[in-house]
Length: 396
Ligand SMILES: *Cc1c(COP(=O)(O)O)cnc(C)c1O
Image 1 (cartoon, helix red, strand yellow):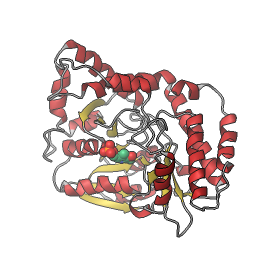
Image 2 (cartoon, helix red, strand yellow; image 1 turned 45 degrees about the vertical axis):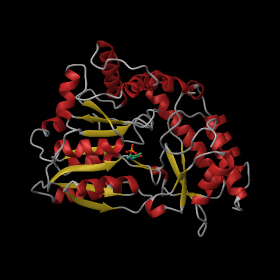
Image 3 (cartoon, protein in one colour; image 1 turned 90 degrees about the vertical axis):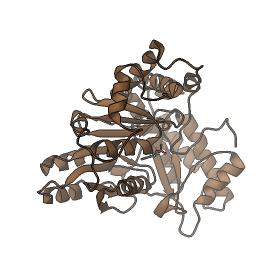
Image 4 (cartoon, protein in one colour; image 1 turned 180 degrees about the vertical axis):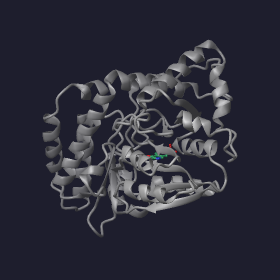
């Protein structure tokens, strides 16, 4: 494995040098004023990235999965019903976690490759006259299939049904890379992690709670201890944690939010969109198909690419790693062996993306697939040459 090549897995993502340095800190006293100067700007930066003024941010030493658990255990009680759609491995895992916590999950089954169906959410919520459903779950970007769903549409569905459930959104592979509007979309809990859009090592579960979610915490009966946001809030009020904080990661988070806001969120989103358009142009030139079934749901952070029938897509990933020292993502769950994934989020430029596409072409040609080396790269170059602005240079 070469450490010089970028990775093209959809998380953990490439870590910019400045963020690596920011995470590499000597030990400080985490009860000293110095820690407050790291903690509070990091929390404030996350709020800006989430486009929220109303929510409170809680960051745990964990990963995105710990963020899911934080959302559930702080607001729900055993036996509560939640509504969730399953359209890939990540939405599946969140549903599984709900069930293991003794929640009753009403699951909307969605073919993998499609987006979350706001109309089905609306039907079910409208039919739930007694308001049995306490929370609605949605995975903004299904990382397994490369599908971005319309979160605003699900909020509209909840409003159309006049349903008071809380609204929890997994934004682990979208936040910091594509537009996320916590307040505008009426999201009650947003969940992410440090190792995707924030371009850091894994190790932080990043959550934000709306006032409505905060109001549900006292009555919630699911057992929680490490992830209790009441302890965390008490800690923050004293410029501290209820336990030892991951100081280096938090310092990284502070700088990461400064970088994203410095580039300008809209520029960050435009950069991700442009890079993704180049990847999609390449996939088209290769004569291959995306797992995502329509342009309306194409993800700007990850593309899951179907290999021809009968060809094991894992061979692409294995060969790329072994021969060229480049990491792509494998297929997960239902699409294991059917797709390989190119992650294109975080610290990435057009030029870096071209190197990944060139590698994928060499790999596919080596493996005897009918792909003309250079075809996808040329298609992506056409997209990138048409790009304006300097955001791709600045992001490096
Ligand atoms: C990566 C990911 C997760 C899980 O995050 P971990 O940090 O690995 O626990 C959850 N949801 C989505 C959509 C993801 O992409």
